[in-house]
Image 1 (cartoon, rainbow, N blue to C red):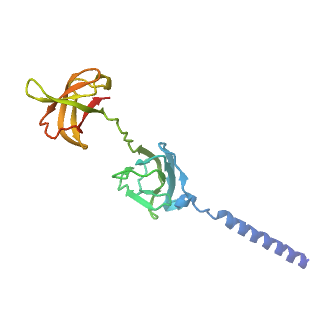
Image 2 (image 1 turned 90 degrees about the vertical axis):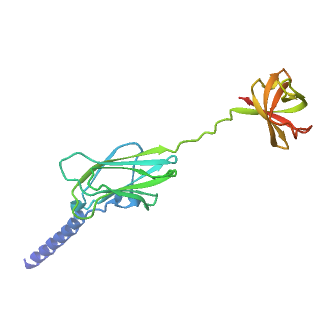
Image 3 (image 1 turned 60 degrees about the horizontal axis):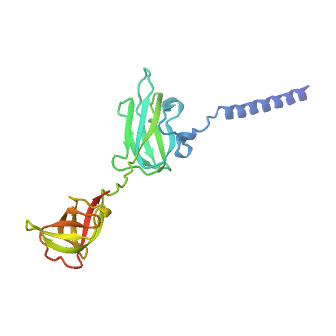
Length: 245
């Protein structure tokens, strides 16, 4: 009988011990994966996402997110407290690089909503970024919020085609007009797009030596008045006329 009681006691001790082990392991709180940049959760651009922090009681003090920008631009980060009658704890928003290194951080300072832009000057490069919402580790009330990140793409500067094309013409002759001005006869005319009133220049070795204005146009030739002096004009001088595209 005594041996039976001893065996029963050992069995009961083992059961109690196992219950204690499994009970302790069952009560152990798993680590918060998004408390570190490595455990950041994906955040879609231009979409609101809801979450909450309860650092003072639950130990949930920071939420890390990650997002990708398809092009360079300015980031617009919006974090707003969900409406309720509770107090608004101190919270801050962190913008970090892909590894979580802080690029910018701002505290709410009593506000229920934080709206910030990054960077203040220039544009954020295309790539991956991290973002965190944080509350202090002590004395923080529950903070339920929604968050959104928007990207304002960097403007694409498109090069405009020149308004004019430059038509080169050879000089056939220099003459004096009835009003005393000098003019040059050119070997280009309507067929090359020249028209009365178009402006241009005389070039010597690529350097401008005088301005000209087309005053008469024929199919394959034209006349241009020289605006200024004709000194320096010789057989190697060429004319360049600005013809609208």
